[in-house]
Every structure is written in structure tokens, then in C-alpha cells.
Length: 107
Image (cartoon, rainbow, N blue to C red; front, top):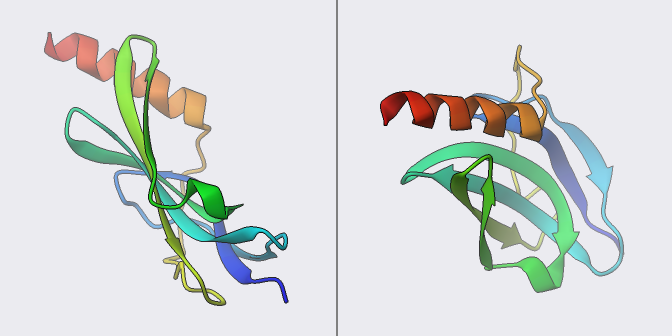
């Protein structure tokens, strides 16, 4: 039967995230997805992902900032355990724009 996982749409700097329980599709597993830039873990999501994405890393650029996305998967109900209680709910594009601005200030 399908797995039940925690879903967290988005959080930054490992802050706690608002989560909810979701049911995955038959070919999906639970995962924690982390995005990093300049060697720092900056972005985190949780949810169901296709099993083929597990243990993969991709590198992309957004607003001249290179970032890496890594998929950490597990196979068991609620195995991507969650921390709750977040007051910030940002979109991925807004956070990456903020990171781009922050990096330009360092240069």
C-alpha cells in the first residue's frame, strides 16, 4: 500500500516547518530535499518523491546563484520525520531571490 509521509512545502536555514501528512503515489517514497548554496544548507522541503530521484543531487542556477538540490529518501510511513511550528511561509523563488541579493552584497 502507499506510504504516508510528512509534507513541508518550504523552510529556510533549517527553521522548523509547518507539516501535514500526505499519502504518496504507488511509485513514490518519503524524502527530505535539501538545497544548498556556497556550502550552506539553506532550503529544505519534505514530501513524496519518485523513487528514481532518491540519492541524487542536481546543480542549477537562479539569479546567478548556483545551488545544489539533494534528495534524501526513506521507505516507511512518516520516516521523513518533521519538526513543526514555523511562522514563516516563503516561496522558493522568493527565498532564492533573497539569497541572490545577499550573495551580491558579499561580493
